[in-house]
Image (cartoon, chains in turn green, blue):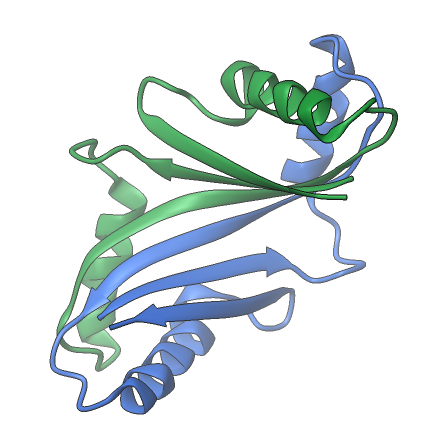
Length: 81
Length: 81
């Protein structure tokens, strides 16, 4: 099964990478861009999961333990059989 | 307009971050995970674009000039009015 995980900084959490992008854009001639937030995509394949539900549980566990920091980041994911 | 940009390492390009995640997973008890690739999500708002087409052109330009490195990364994006 192919999995795509989306990890984004929680609202209200400082995002220095997003702030750096936002400050750079006007210098490159892009006006009117605001609210820049930078997150992560993690693509992966899981073999041997008994079902989509089992895979879902496993990926959720992976997100909480390694892929995201639940204190400062939100995550969602999509599983494709 | 709200924009979400997806930046992923091109196929065949070494992805050390993905490799690090992949090597960590078995130590945490997750078996059967392969092909881990880590990319970026950039969320932003654009004001003052005349149309969706104009915004699309602007975002594409932003991707090529700042948000992605087209030599080693692919990008796609979604625009929501």
